[in-house]
Length: 72
Image 1 (tube, helix red, strand yellow):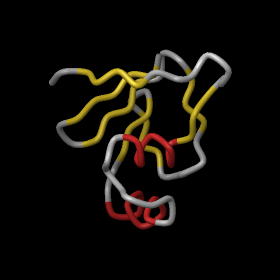
Image 2 (cartoon, helix red, strand yellow):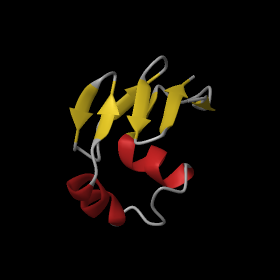
Image 3 (cartoon, one colour):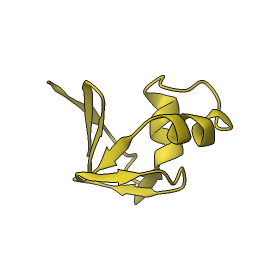
Image 4 (cartoon, helix red, strand yellow):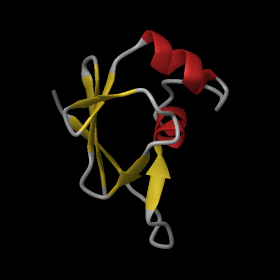
């Protein structure tokens, strides 16, 4: 499984899981995040996560089914 790199803008310290789901086209709107996370298991640094507001920092690894993302 290849890691997809998600780059945070230089002026940002983190992004939220909700934003990651939107920019990777797993959901189309922010409101869908709650439903998506209730129906799917998403792992952040090997721990199951269901909070759409979870802050993702550089170096975090997010895994969902056959996709993996690393925050840079």
